[in-house]
Length: 100
Image (cartoon, rainbow, N blue to C red; front, side, top):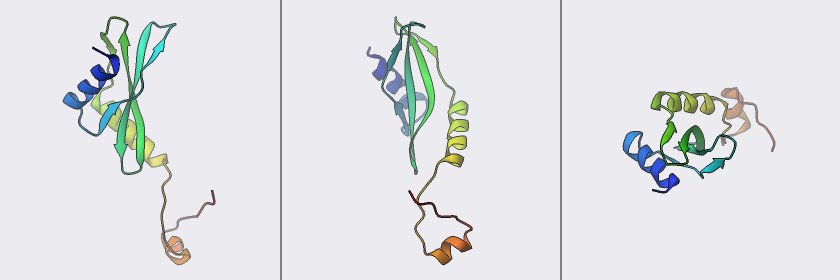
């Protein structure tokens, strides 16, 4: 079974439909496939973990649901977002606008 599909199927069956596998990368030094776990949030897609799979297709590292939830929480605290409002509304919410 293809590495990407193996991780995608595991996530769908064990974690939920808001996660999926990212692009697999092969680590020549460690001789393992590394596959990031992507999670869809209201602010975009966040990497929340990483699977390791050996050259024979066996899981070597599976991030737990608790680890992924903790990562989401930490990332969401630091992730910027757009807020539309007048200067008065921004001042009331104590939001300091930033020009990009």
